[in-house]
Length: 245
Image (cartoon, rainbow, N blue to C red; front, top):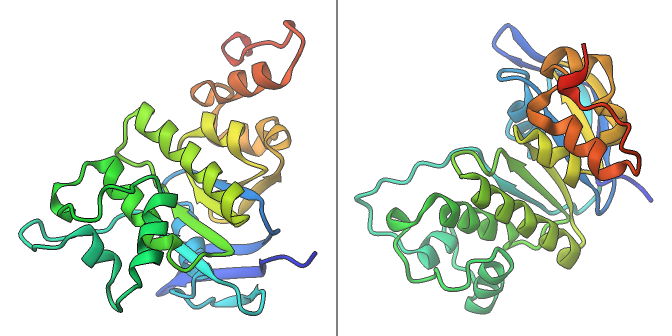
């Protein structure tokens, strides 16, 4: 099965500054790939390159012919004084058939929000509307740039659960930038750890024990390793990170 998207020796620059170098990765149909890394490590830039918003300085991006991509940006500012309903927002810049619009809201877990004003939505509702907008095109590949930023833990958990349901329903692949390391370890098929380049990549189990990952996030990683080991080990002898030296 051919990858949906692939990068080969990708280099991205802003002016004279290189933000990413030598990035080679690929995403297979139906898998969830999560990108982790410190602030400024190039995670958002990689997503923007994948959707075609940034042109590579070197290397190449190969997309499967006819690939449909849905994108949920990290931030979207909407003027609070602008009278804009959810339905109207989803219909910009071109009108969307009502049935498709309702289906997207349903899939995003926001079936009752169509008549609400965008300015009145809570953080979680806003993110679900952005997800609905990304789902309008029934994407083969869904890109999410820190979609739970600003949400509390229950809100984040509910959103990640919704993403898993979307993947199962649509059969789409997901690339997600996330700081929620414990979720990454539980919900991803593959993890890409970046810091201006790809430090390490592989299954959560492989990345969790990689020296490069531990150098960036420590052995605790907000309990990510402990949670991962606990969930995937039948032994009670697995040391928890805070016992390690």
